[in-house]
Every structure is written in structure tokens, then in C-alpha cells.
Length: 262
Image (cartoon, rainbow, N blue to C red):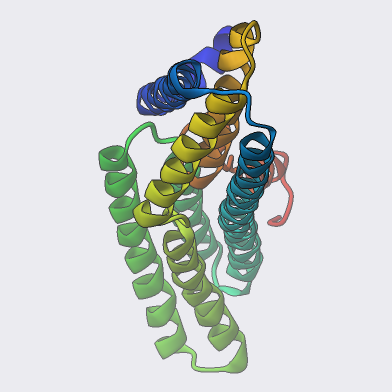
């Protein structure tokens, strides 16, 4: 439980409380207006039920769409991490094609430093640290590229070309990771969702009968949790629901046990 609490982002918690407060206030406002204006009018009640049902349906549909966008972005980030691990594993294997043992060891050292840098990128706590680690990995890529390109110039053949291509894939896979490292849901969509939520909860409060006021906080709380889950999935690199470098860490364990390279 303590580990889960440590993963919670302070801004995400503030957003959860703010959304819950706004939705609960909307439901309470609807209930207050209902107590002042409600009359025994069956026709009016039937019309209100239709409006409430339509609004809740649209609100639920919009939440479903935004959830699908967030999950799509999360899956893209997971795939990008997997591609990085495969590109790194391929580069490690191609280092055995270098002509000398010292050259192989030097290339493996650079790749190991790059692997550590990429794992640290996924575990970074803030954007500044993540940006610094990205620049570090790019510098290591440049060193690796210069090293293998010099070897390819000395012995231009299909074997050396394959090593150069493997090193080039490191940059491509990292760029794909950075391309997916963004919010999938724009702020405008969030604002529209909040407006729908306020209208829906106002109508819920307005529709509630006397004696049911204790249930006013249930729907806002559940809705706030659902929106919190969507925001957690959509935020890259932090929060309870985030991409972890499982494949990169598995590659690191494999290398430590003598796998991939002799």
C-alpha cells in the first residue's frame, strides 16, 4: 500500500479532489434547485428523465472514447519500449562481428551504458531528469555510431554494414519512444468532458427525491475515480499506471548472465 501511495502523483491527486468537489457541488446545486422548484407534475418528471438519460448516455460515451485514446497511447509506449529492447539486443549480438576482441568489448561497454541510461529514463521521476537522460543516451548513440562507422570504413563489407544498421536502429527506436511520450487527450477534450460531467450531475441531483440526498456523493466519487484512471493512463512516465522498462531490464539480466554475447 505504501508503494502504491508513493507512485501517486501530487497533481493527479489534486485533480481527483478538484473533480470530485466540482461534481459533488453540481449534484448538490441540482438538489437544492429541485427542492425549491419541484412540483407534482408527472409530465415534467418524464421529460426530465429523458433529458437525464440522454445526457448520461452522451457523458458515458465521451468517457469511453477518451479512455480508448488513453489506452491506445499507453499501448504505443509499451510497444516502443519493447522495440528499444529488441534493437539493443540486436546491436549487442552484432558486436561479435567486429574484427578484434578489444573492439567488441569497447562496443559492448558503450551499449551497456546506453542500456542503463534507457532504463533510468523510464524510471525518471520528473521531466527535467528524463530530458537529461535522453541527451545522455543520444551522446552514447553518437559515440557508438562513430565507433562502428570507423570500423565500417576500414573494412567496408556486408558484415560491417549490418552492424551499422543495427546501431542506426537504436536512434530510430528511441525517437519512436519520444514520439509516443505525450498526452493523447487534448485539454479541450478534458474541458468538454468536465462540462458534460457538471451538467449530468446537476440533473442527477435535481432528479433525486427527498430522502435520497445521502447518495449524492456516490456518483461524483465514482465518476472522479474513473476520470482519475483515464488521466493516469494518459500521463506518460509517472503515476500509478505507467510504462515500466520490463523488456530492457530483462535484457540487462540476460547480459549479466552471459547471454547474447560470448
